Length: 235
Image 1 (cartoon, rainbow, N blue to C red):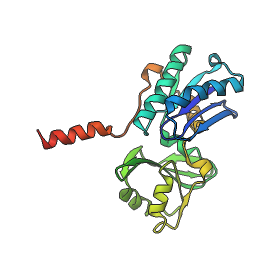
Image 2 (tube, rainbow, N blue to C red):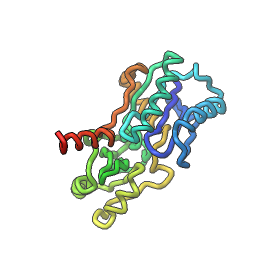
Image 3 (cartoon, one colour):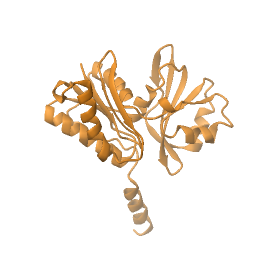
């Protein structure tokens, strides 16, 4: 079984080819280019280097949120196109779930955080110990202050993962002695982690058609928020 996985939810764009046994190839670009410029050329090059035509892909996996609204749409559109063209199924993976796979050897609380702006982060917490991982709650948008109050209650070591990790570490390190910042190689979104999360979803039958693949924003786009605010002020 071969999975082609993508992540375009933040500044880094990533694509990976993997099987149940190993990651065959992975490309990642984090230089500020728009994902519409990079993701399809990366896919083409990766598959060519791996000697794997699109027809040999069994599943297409993608992070479907939370994340950048534009980034999500680009990644999902790319996967939809490939899946439609090859008549293959898709796997939608939470960006936060995928991030939790970045630190497989850590024992404690994995705190996945993505910068959501407006003094908020997209967040989910996971308890990982003895080779097992359990999600402690749903994906959410939460303020820095509210997340800090939750983390103060944790006695186990806490590792921050995601593009909001450094931001949260600088905010929290003075009051959370059990806080650890993940290293640069494991901090950001990775398509191979999307693929690993997809493997578990495939095993449990959580596959969907290309037509059913949609983004999960968690929060309204800024334009809609501004419109709602304007309507409240001027009914």
